Image 1 (cartoon, rainbow, N blue to C red):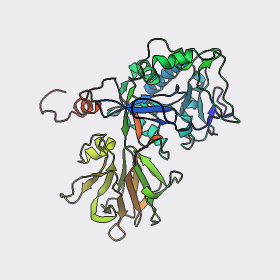
Image 2 (cartoon, rainbow, N blue to C red):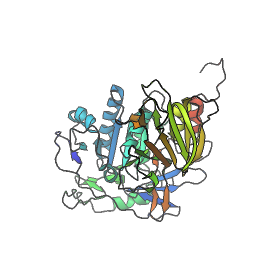
Image 3 (tube, helix red, strand yellow):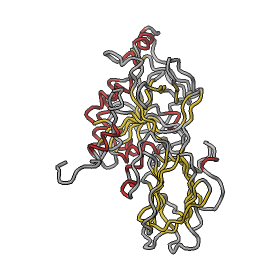
Image 4 (cartoon, rainbow, N blue to C red):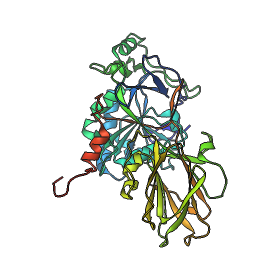
Length: 443
Protein backbone atom coordinates (compact mmCIF):
# COMPACT_ATOMS: atom_id res chain seq x y z
CA UNK A 1 0.00 0.00 0.00
CA UNK A 2 1.16 3.53 -0.71
CA UNK A 3 -0.58 5.79 1.80
CA UNK A 4 0.91 5.53 5.28
CA UNK A 5 0.93 7.35 8.58
CA UNK A 6 3.63 9.92 9.27
CA UNK A 7 2.82 11.22 12.76
CA UNK A 8 6.33 10.10 13.73
CA UNK A 9 7.35 10.13 10.09
CA UNK A 10 7.34 6.37 9.93
CA UNK A 11 6.23 4.70 6.72
CA UNK A 12 4.33 1.77 8.15
CA UNK A 13 0.73 0.60 7.96
CA UNK A 14 -1.59 1.80 5.24
CA UNK A 15 -5.09 3.12 5.52
CA UNK A 16 -6.36 -0.10 3.98
CA UNK A 17 -9.23 1.68 2.27
CA UNK A 18 -10.82 -0.15 -0.63
CA UNK A 19 -11.73 1.70 -3.78
CA UNK A 20 -15.38 2.74 -3.33
CA UNK A 21 -17.89 1.20 -5.67
CA UNK A 22 -19.80 3.29 -8.17
CA UNK A 23 -23.48 3.43 -7.38
CA UNK A 24 -26.56 5.49 -8.07
CA UNK A 25 -27.55 8.17 -5.58
CA UNK A 26 -31.28 8.71 -5.27
CA UNK A 27 -32.28 12.23 -6.26
CA UNK A 28 -34.95 13.93 -8.31
CA UNK A 29 -32.29 15.37 -10.61
CA UNK A 30 -29.81 13.69 -12.93
CA UNK A 31 -26.95 12.63 -10.69
CA UNK A 32 -23.81 10.60 -10.57
CA UNK A 33 -21.18 9.36 -8.16
CA UNK A 34 -17.42 9.45 -8.66
CA UNK A 35 -15.88 7.38 -5.88
CA UNK A 36 -17.52 8.80 -2.73
CA UNK A 37 -19.06 11.95 -4.16
CA UNK A 38 -22.19 12.82 -6.06
CA UNK A 39 -22.48 15.50 -8.72
CA UNK A 40 -25.78 16.54 -10.28
CA UNK A 41 -26.84 19.07 -12.88
CA UNK A 42 -27.97 22.42 -11.48
CA UNK A 43 -30.83 24.39 -13.01
CA UNK A 44 -30.32 27.42 -15.24
CA UNK A 45 -26.53 27.20 -15.40
CA UNK A 46 -24.09 24.97 -17.22
CA UNK A 47 -22.23 23.90 -14.10
CA UNK A 48 -22.65 20.83 -11.92
CA UNK A 49 -23.58 20.51 -8.28
CA UNK A 50 -21.47 18.58 -5.77
CA UNK A 51 -23.28 16.19 -3.41
CA UNK A 52 -21.51 13.81 -1.10
CA UNK A 53 -23.34 10.53 -0.43
CA UNK A 54 -21.28 10.35 2.80
CA UNK A 55 -18.81 12.76 4.42
CA UNK A 56 -15.42 12.95 2.67
CA UNK A 57 -12.65 11.31 4.67
CA UNK A 58 -9.33 11.83 2.83
CA UNK A 59 -8.18 15.30 1.73
CA UNK A 60 -4.98 15.78 -0.27
CA UNK A 61 -3.19 19.12 0.26
CA UNK A 62 -0.88 20.41 -2.48
CA UNK A 63 1.16 23.61 -2.07
CA UNK A 64 3.30 25.83 -4.24
CA UNK A 65 6.94 24.83 -3.95
CA UNK A 66 9.44 27.13 -2.19
CA UNK A 67 6.69 29.50 -1.08
CA UNK A 68 6.68 30.22 2.69
CA UNK A 69 3.26 31.89 2.56
CA UNK A 70 1.75 28.84 0.87
CA UNK A 71 3.41 26.57 3.44
CA UNK A 72 1.97 28.59 6.31
CA UNK A 73 -1.47 28.60 4.68
CA UNK A 74 -1.37 24.82 4.28
CA UNK A 75 -0.33 24.39 7.92
CA UNK A 76 -3.17 26.62 9.13
CA UNK A 77 -5.66 24.86 6.86
CA UNK A 78 -4.61 21.40 8.06
CA UNK A 79 -4.85 22.48 11.71
CA UNK A 80 -8.35 23.84 11.11
CA UNK A 81 -9.46 20.62 9.42
CA UNK A 82 -8.15 18.51 12.28
CA UNK A 83 -9.86 20.64 14.93
CA UNK A 84 -13.18 21.21 13.17
CA UNK A 85 -13.57 18.03 11.11
CA UNK A 86 -12.17 15.18 13.24
CA UNK A 87 -13.24 12.46 10.82
CA UNK A 88 -10.94 13.68 8.03
CA UNK A 89 -7.46 12.34 7.22
CA UNK A 90 -4.84 14.75 5.85
CA UNK A 91 -2.69 13.56 2.93
CA UNK A 92 0.48 15.39 1.87
CA UNK A 93 3.07 15.01 -0.83
CA UNK A 94 6.23 13.32 0.57
CA UNK A 95 8.33 16.48 0.40
CA UNK A 96 5.72 18.52 2.25
CA UNK A 97 5.25 15.76 4.82
CA UNK A 98 9.00 15.68 5.48
CA UNK A 99 9.05 19.43 6.08
CA UNK A 100 5.83 19.79 8.08
CA UNK A 101 5.11 16.59 10.00
CA UNK A 102 6.86 17.77 13.16
CA UNK A 103 4.71 20.90 13.31
CA UNK A 104 1.50 18.84 13.59
CA UNK A 105 0.23 17.16 16.75
CA UNK A 106 -1.87 14.77 14.68
CA UNK A 107 -1.00 12.14 12.08
CA UNK A 108 -0.73 12.95 8.39
CA UNK A 109 -0.39 10.53 5.49
CA UNK A 110 1.87 10.34 2.49
CA UNK A 111 3.73 7.95 0.20
CA UNK A 112 5.13 4.86 1.86
CA UNK A 113 8.40 5.41 0.01
CA UNK A 114 10.23 8.50 1.37
CA UNK A 115 12.51 8.56 -1.68
CA UNK A 116 9.64 9.51 -3.98
CA UNK A 117 9.16 13.20 -4.67
CA UNK A 118 5.41 12.81 -5.22
CA UNK A 119 2.71 10.40 -4.15
CA UNK A 120 2.35 7.35 -6.38
CA UNK A 121 -0.52 8.25 -8.79
CA UNK A 122 -1.60 4.61 -8.95
CA UNK A 123 -2.70 4.78 -5.30
CA UNK A 124 -4.45 8.15 -5.29
CA UNK A 125 -7.75 7.54 -7.16
CA UNK A 126 -8.93 5.03 -4.55
CA UNK A 127 -7.70 7.09 -1.59
CA UNK A 128 -8.43 10.77 -2.20
CA UNK A 129 -11.92 12.25 -1.85
CA UNK A 130 -10.93 15.92 -2.28
CA UNK A 131 -7.79 17.87 -3.22
CA UNK A 132 -7.03 21.40 -2.00
CA UNK A 133 -4.31 23.53 -3.57
CA UNK A 134 -2.41 26.52 -2.18
CA UNK A 135 -0.62 28.44 -4.92
CA UNK A 136 -1.21 29.55 -8.46
CA UNK A 137 -2.42 27.89 -11.63
CA UNK A 138 0.73 25.75 -11.76
CA UNK A 139 -0.15 24.21 -8.40
CA UNK A 140 -3.58 23.24 -9.71
CA UNK A 141 -1.93 21.64 -12.72
CA UNK A 142 0.41 19.71 -10.44
CA UNK A 143 -2.50 18.43 -8.39
CA UNK A 144 -4.23 17.34 -11.58
CA UNK A 145 -1.04 15.69 -12.84
CA UNK A 146 -1.03 13.40 -9.79
CA UNK A 147 -4.04 11.76 -11.43
CA UNK A 148 -2.69 11.94 -15.00
CA UNK A 149 -2.96 8.17 -15.51
CA UNK A 150 -6.34 7.86 -13.75
CA UNK A 151 -9.77 7.93 -15.35
CA UNK A 152 -11.32 9.95 -12.51
CA UNK A 153 -9.99 12.98 -10.65
CA UNK A 154 -11.32 14.09 -7.24
CA UNK A 155 -12.81 17.58 -6.90
CA UNK A 156 -10.16 20.29 -6.61
CA UNK A 157 -10.65 23.21 -4.21
CA UNK A 158 -8.15 25.89 -5.19
CA UNK A 159 -6.91 28.85 -3.13
CA UNK A 160 -5.22 31.52 -5.20
CA UNK A 161 -1.74 32.41 -3.91
CA UNK A 162 0.14 32.68 -7.19
CA UNK A 163 1.08 35.41 -9.64
CA UNK A 164 -2.03 35.45 -11.83
CA UNK A 165 -4.49 32.93 -10.43
CA UNK A 166 -6.76 32.65 -13.44
CA UNK A 167 -7.85 29.16 -12.36
CA UNK A 168 -7.82 29.83 -8.61
CA UNK A 169 -11.34 30.37 -7.33
CA UNK A 170 -10.96 31.24 -3.66
CA UNK A 171 -8.89 33.68 -1.64
CA UNK A 172 -6.85 32.00 1.06
CA UNK A 173 -8.49 34.09 3.78
CA UNK A 174 -11.79 32.40 2.90
CA UNK A 175 -10.55 28.85 3.53
CA UNK A 176 -12.90 28.17 6.49
CA UNK A 177 -15.99 29.19 4.60
CA UNK A 178 -14.84 27.52 1.40
CA UNK A 179 -14.14 24.16 2.97
CA UNK A 180 -17.36 24.18 4.97
CA UNK A 181 -19.38 24.82 1.80
CA UNK A 182 -17.65 21.95 0.05
CA UNK A 183 -17.83 19.58 3.01
CA UNK A 184 -21.53 20.26 3.63
CA UNK A 185 -22.40 20.37 -0.08
CA UNK A 186 -25.72 18.64 -0.66
CA UNK A 187 -26.06 17.55 2.98
CA UNK A 188 -29.62 18.43 3.96
CA UNK A 189 -31.23 18.44 7.38
CA UNK A 190 -32.49 14.93 6.79
CA UNK A 191 -28.96 13.69 6.17
CA UNK A 192 -27.76 15.24 9.42
CA UNK A 193 -30.70 13.84 11.37
CA UNK A 194 -30.03 10.31 10.24
CA UNK A 195 -26.43 10.62 11.40
CA UNK A 196 -27.42 12.13 14.73
CA UNK A 197 -29.93 9.33 15.29
CA UNK A 198 -27.36 6.65 14.45
CA UNK A 199 -25.62 4.43 16.99
CA UNK A 200 -23.21 6.57 19.00
CA UNK A 201 -20.69 3.78 19.48
CA UNK A 202 -17.05 4.55 18.59
CA UNK A 203 -16.08 4.28 14.94
CA UNK A 204 -14.71 0.93 13.88
CA UNK A 205 -11.04 1.39 12.91
CA UNK A 206 -10.08 0.71 9.34
CA UNK A 207 -8.76 -2.80 8.93
CA UNK A 208 -5.51 -3.22 7.06
CA UNK A 209 -6.49 -6.81 6.35
CA UNK A 210 -9.92 -6.49 4.74
CA UNK A 211 -9.77 -2.78 3.84
CA UNK A 212 -13.14 -2.13 5.53
CA UNK A 213 -14.15 1.47 6.06
CA UNK A 214 -16.90 3.30 7.90
CA UNK A 215 -18.78 6.52 7.17
CA UNK A 216 -16.98 8.38 9.98
CA UNK A 217 -20.15 8.89 12.00
CA UNK A 218 -18.33 8.91 15.33
CA UNK A 219 -14.84 9.65 16.56
CA UNK A 220 -13.67 8.75 20.08
CA UNK A 221 -17.24 8.16 21.13
CA UNK A 222 -18.47 11.52 19.83
CA UNK A 223 -20.19 12.65 16.65
CA UNK A 224 -18.19 13.13 13.47
CA UNK A 225 -18.97 13.77 9.83
CA UNK A 226 -21.90 16.05 9.06
CA UNK A 227 -23.38 15.60 12.55
CA UNK A 228 -20.32 17.25 14.15
CA UNK A 229 -20.64 20.53 12.23
CA UNK A 230 -22.56 23.26 13.99
CA UNK A 231 -24.91 25.60 12.21
CA UNK A 232 -27.35 25.12 9.39
CA UNK A 233 -26.59 22.89 6.44
CA UNK A 234 -26.61 24.24 2.92
CA UNK A 235 -29.52 21.98 2.05
CA UNK A 236 -29.75 19.11 -0.39
CA UNK A 237 -30.48 21.46 -3.31
CA UNK A 238 -27.61 23.92 -2.66
CA UNK A 239 -24.53 21.94 -3.52
CA UNK A 240 -21.21 23.58 -4.28
CA UNK A 241 -20.83 24.40 -7.96
CA UNK A 242 -18.46 22.31 -10.06
CA UNK A 243 -16.89 23.06 -13.42
CA UNK A 244 -15.85 19.85 -15.16
CA UNK A 245 -12.74 20.82 -17.13
CA UNK A 246 -11.68 18.79 -20.16
CA UNK A 247 -8.36 16.96 -20.47
CA UNK A 248 -6.22 15.78 -23.37
CA UNK A 249 -5.27 12.13 -23.80
CA UNK A 250 -1.64 12.06 -24.93
CA UNK A 251 0.64 9.31 -26.25
CA UNK A 252 4.29 10.01 -27.07
CA UNK A 253 5.80 7.51 -29.51
CA UNK A 254 9.49 7.47 -30.33
CA UNK A 255 9.48 3.95 -31.76
CA UNK A 256 7.11 4.42 -34.69
CA UNK A 257 4.43 2.09 -33.30
CA UNK A 258 0.83 2.58 -34.35
CA UNK A 259 -0.94 2.58 -30.98
CA UNK A 260 -3.14 5.63 -30.49
CA UNK A 261 -4.41 7.35 -27.34
CA UNK A 262 -7.98 6.50 -28.25
CA UNK A 263 -7.26 2.77 -28.42
CA UNK A 264 -5.15 2.34 -25.28
CA UNK A 265 -6.89 0.87 -22.25
CA UNK A 266 -7.28 2.62 -18.89
CA UNK A 267 -4.81 0.13 -17.41
CA UNK A 268 -2.19 0.94 -20.05
CA UNK A 269 0.01 3.81 -18.84
CA UNK A 270 1.54 4.48 -22.25
CA UNK A 271 -0.73 7.51 -22.34
CA UNK A 272 -1.26 10.34 -19.86
CA UNK A 273 -3.84 13.07 -19.44
CA UNK A 274 -3.13 16.80 -19.62
CA UNK A 275 -5.37 19.49 -18.15
CA UNK A 276 -3.66 22.44 -19.84
CA UNK A 277 -1.61 21.59 -22.91
CA UNK A 278 1.12 19.59 -24.58
CA UNK A 279 4.01 21.50 -26.16
CA UNK A 280 6.79 20.52 -28.51
CA UNK A 281 9.55 23.11 -28.88
CA UNK A 282 12.93 23.29 -30.58
CA UNK A 283 14.54 24.12 -27.21
CA UNK A 284 18.20 25.12 -27.40
CA UNK A 285 18.48 24.13 -31.07
CA UNK A 286 18.88 27.30 -33.19
CA UNK A 287 17.02 25.78 -36.16
CA UNK A 288 13.27 25.77 -36.72
CA UNK A 289 11.50 22.43 -36.35
CA UNK A 290 9.67 20.77 -39.24
CA UNK A 291 6.53 19.20 -37.85
CA UNK A 292 4.03 17.21 -39.88
CA UNK A 293 0.43 17.74 -38.74
CA UNK A 294 -2.26 15.11 -39.26
CA UNK A 295 -5.93 15.78 -38.47
CA UNK A 296 -8.14 12.73 -38.13
CA UNK A 297 -5.45 10.61 -39.81
CA UNK A 298 -5.17 12.91 -42.86
CA UNK A 299 -2.14 15.04 -43.61
CA UNK A 300 -2.85 18.76 -43.12
CA UNK A 301 0.47 20.53 -43.48
CA UNK A 302 4.09 20.63 -42.38
CA UNK A 303 4.68 23.42 -39.94
CA UNK A 304 8.07 25.15 -39.90
CA UNK A 305 8.12 26.84 -36.51
CA UNK A 306 9.70 27.01 -33.08
CA UNK A 307 7.11 24.46 -31.99
CA UNK A 308 3.44 23.53 -31.65
CA UNK A 309 0.89 23.68 -28.83
CA UNK A 310 -2.19 21.53 -28.44
CA UNK A 311 -4.28 22.93 -25.61
CA UNK A 312 -7.56 22.32 -23.86
CA UNK A 313 -10.06 25.17 -23.41
CA UNK A 314 -8.54 25.59 -19.92
CA UNK A 315 -5.06 25.88 -21.45
CA UNK A 316 -6.22 28.31 -24.12
CA UNK A 317 -5.48 31.22 -21.74
CA UNK A 318 -1.89 30.06 -21.08
CA UNK A 319 1.02 29.61 -23.53
CA UNK A 320 -1.41 29.20 -26.41
CA UNK A 321 -2.83 32.67 -25.79
CA UNK A 322 0.68 34.18 -25.69
CA UNK A 323 1.34 32.53 -29.06
CA UNK A 324 -1.75 34.07 -30.64
CA UNK A 325 -4.24 31.27 -29.99
CA UNK A 326 -7.96 31.71 -29.46
CA UNK A 327 -9.56 32.07 -26.03
CA UNK A 328 -12.01 29.20 -25.55
CA UNK A 329 -14.63 28.90 -22.84
CA UNK A 330 -13.91 25.85 -20.64
CA UNK A 331 -17.36 24.38 -21.33
CA UNK A 332 -16.65 24.13 -25.07
CA UNK A 333 -15.65 20.54 -25.89
CA UNK A 334 -12.70 21.31 -28.14
CA UNK A 335 -8.93 21.53 -28.48
CA UNK A 336 -6.77 24.30 -29.90
CA UNK A 337 -3.81 23.76 -32.26
CA UNK A 338 -1.45 26.76 -32.07
CA UNK A 339 1.93 27.25 -33.82
CA UNK A 340 4.80 28.89 -31.91
CA UNK A 341 6.48 31.56 -34.07
CA UNK A 342 5.70 29.92 -37.46
CA UNK A 343 7.76 30.89 -40.49
CA UNK A 344 4.60 31.29 -42.56
CA UNK A 345 2.42 34.25 -41.66
CA UNK A 346 -0.64 32.41 -43.03
CA UNK A 347 -0.49 29.62 -40.43
CA UNK A 348 -3.27 30.51 -38.03
CA UNK A 349 -4.43 28.67 -34.87
CA UNK A 350 -7.13 26.02 -35.36
CA UNK A 351 -9.99 25.10 -33.02
CA UNK A 352 -11.05 21.48 -33.50
CA UNK A 353 -13.63 19.15 -31.96
CA UNK A 354 -12.16 17.40 -28.94
CA UNK A 355 -12.92 14.01 -30.49
CA UNK A 356 -10.62 14.73 -33.46
CA UNK A 357 -7.30 12.83 -33.24
CA UNK A 358 -4.29 15.07 -33.89
CA UNK A 359 -0.83 13.72 -34.68
CA UNK A 360 2.39 15.75 -34.64
CA UNK A 361 5.28 14.00 -36.40
CA UNK A 362 8.87 15.24 -36.49
CA UNK A 363 9.97 15.14 -40.12
CA UNK A 364 12.82 12.76 -40.93
CA UNK A 365 13.98 14.74 -44.00
CA UNK A 366 14.12 18.41 -43.12
CA UNK A 367 15.00 18.64 -39.44
CA UNK A 368 18.55 19.84 -38.84
CA UNK A 369 18.03 19.44 -35.11
CA UNK A 370 17.65 15.78 -34.23
CA UNK A 371 15.41 16.23 -31.19
CA UNK A 372 12.80 18.63 -29.83
CA UNK A 373 11.61 19.12 -26.26
CA UNK A 374 8.23 17.82 -25.09
CA UNK A 375 6.34 19.37 -22.17
CA UNK A 376 3.04 18.23 -20.67
CA UNK A 377 1.28 20.70 -18.37
CA UNK A 378 4.49 22.62 -17.85
CA UNK A 379 6.67 19.61 -17.02
CA UNK A 380 9.36 18.74 -19.56
CA UNK A 381 9.84 15.09 -20.34
CA UNK A 382 13.33 13.73 -19.77
CA UNK A 383 13.23 12.15 -23.20
CA UNK A 384 12.53 14.47 -26.12
CA UNK A 385 10.95 13.68 -29.48
CA UNK A 386 13.44 12.46 -32.08
CA UNK A 387 13.05 12.61 -35.85
CA UNK A 388 10.47 10.08 -37.00
CA UNK A 389 8.75 10.14 -33.62
CA UNK A 390 5.25 11.44 -33.14
CA UNK A 391 2.78 12.64 -30.54
CA UNK A 392 -0.85 11.58 -30.76
CA UNK A 393 -3.48 13.62 -28.97
CA UNK A 394 -7.24 13.38 -28.64
CA UNK A 395 -9.65 15.03 -26.22
CA UNK A 396 -10.57 12.85 -23.26
CA UNK A 397 -14.08 11.49 -23.62
CA UNK A 398 -16.28 12.51 -20.70
CA UNK A 399 -18.81 9.71 -20.43
CA UNK A 400 -22.12 9.56 -18.64
CA UNK A 401 -24.04 6.36 -18.10
CA UNK A 402 -26.28 4.78 -15.48
CA UNK A 403 -23.29 4.61 -13.11
CA UNK A 404 -22.34 8.27 -13.48
CA UNK A 405 -19.70 10.50 -15.04
CA UNK A 406 -16.17 9.50 -15.98
CA UNK A 407 -13.38 11.83 -17.06
CA UNK A 408 -12.53 15.49 -16.68
CA UNK A 409 -11.23 17.52 -13.75
CA UNK A 410 -14.02 18.68 -11.38
CA UNK A 411 -13.03 22.14 -10.09
CA UNK A 412 -14.95 23.75 -7.22
CA UNK A 413 -16.26 27.15 -8.26
CA UNK A 414 -16.56 30.12 -5.92
CA UNK A 415 -19.91 31.32 -4.64
CA UNK A 416 -23.37 29.83 -4.75
CA UNK A 417 -25.12 31.93 -7.37
CA UNK A 418 -27.27 30.19 -9.94
CA UNK A 419 -27.44 32.86 -12.65
CA UNK A 420 -25.59 32.96 -15.90
CA UNK A 421 -24.36 36.45 -15.06
CA UNK A 422 -22.40 34.99 -12.13
CA UNK A 423 -19.66 33.60 -14.33
CA UNK A 424 -16.13 33.38 -12.95
CA UNK A 425 -14.65 32.92 -16.42
CA UNK A 426 -15.97 36.28 -17.66
CA UNK A 427 -14.75 37.96 -14.47
CA UNK A 428 -11.32 36.43 -15.01
CA UNK A 429 -11.11 37.79 -18.55
CA UNK A 430 -12.02 41.28 -17.41
CA UNK A 431 -10.25 41.44 -14.06
CA UNK A 432 -7.10 39.37 -14.65
CA UNK A 433 -6.44 39.36 -18.39
CA UNK A 434 -7.81 42.91 -18.91
CA UNK A 435 -9.68 41.74 -22.00
CA UNK A 436 -10.09 44.56 -24.57
CA UNK A 437 -8.81 47.07 -22.02
CA UNK A 438 -8.54 50.56 -23.54
CA UNK A 439 -5.14 52.15 -23.93
CA UNK A 440 -4.27 55.07 -21.70
CA UNK A 441 -6.46 54.04 -18.76
CA UNK A 442 -5.15 53.00 -15.40
CA UNK A 443 -5.64 49.34 -14.33
